[in-house]
Amino acid sequence: MAKKIVQIVGPVLLLAYFITLVLHISAQSDQYQWDFRTHRKAAEIFTAGSDPYDSRILLSQKDASFLYTYPPVTLFFYDLFNQTDYHTAFHIFLLVKCALLIGLVIFWRWAFLGPVGDSLFFLFCLLVFNSAVFTDLIAGNINLVEQVLLWLAFFFYLKHRLVLFCVFVLLAASFKMTPIFFVVLLLASDHPKKIHYFGCAAAIFLAYLFIQYLIYPEMFTGFVHNALTVVGESGAVGASTEKFVKDLFALISQLVGPLPPAIISVVVLGMAALVIFLSGKAYFLLKHNQNDHPDREKMILFLICLVYALIHPRFKDYAYMLLIVPSYFIMKTTRLKNAFPFIFVLSILAAPHLLLPGFDILSALVWRFFPLAIAYIIWGLYLYEIFSASKNQIPLSSDK
Image (cartoon, rainbow, N blue to C red):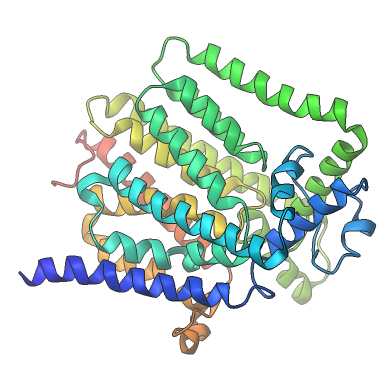
């Protein structure tokens, strides 16, 4: 009886807290959703006949604070929010994202977790990876739309409906280019036409970019320039492997003097190569040694999600939303489930990084690259689990 009460009261309290956070964001329309403000302003400049990729034009505007880095066609999407005043557009965008988030969490639990998705999963969603969910809402980025499209693609991938998988991956990659990475899942499929689908998806994506170059050559060139510029920016919210290495070497440089930039590049590429190499070994073990496992394809999918996050050169704090389901699934279903309480607490430890209302007093616990550290821990434990299961010739299971 007590367990049922907790299962009901827990999600209700979390929902109430989530609503409080949304109301907090709503009341600060001039402070939050800075990404949305900049992107909306870029669309306004575009419809006025100017070049939104020109930093001198865009950054001279009151509501713009950084470069526009999405392809030209995406400006039409943000122009939809210029059909009304800013405060109305702000709340429409926020409400749409809240609806997508609630739907996504329900979809995650139903389509990817099943019995694993207990009530604790809702708390995990809210706080994990420095509260990536809340970060996304306050930033006003298109990331949540991208996440919805990607998880729809993953759903169809697991259902072996590869055409729909390709469609949703391409849609997810229409704003930020990097989600096109996930077409590599086609190569992991057992479908006889996987190479055909891979080639078609790649061709359509290249055509999507080339057509924009033909129509808007100057703006497309500006888009490429801006995209390459932000990859190299320092950024306070880019908790990626590349940013960690750069910050680490900046600290070392203060102690021993300037270091050649080439060293940073070598270390970043070396770490990416190591992640790909070890994950590749784990992939082949899953592919061949866990052939009868009912969740084999799902485990491969989650492994690739982890690889994507660890090698992405500009993986932002809110982008860690991608790892919520893989992390929870790995912690709950592998033979390392006894470590779940420890990893769960560790994974949400630095959530106060955002100074969430009611959690301000714990802000001293913040570590800038804490989400990245958690991602590496989960990735490492997952590899250990896969290699150990293969060595001992036992199935990956939570029943051991």
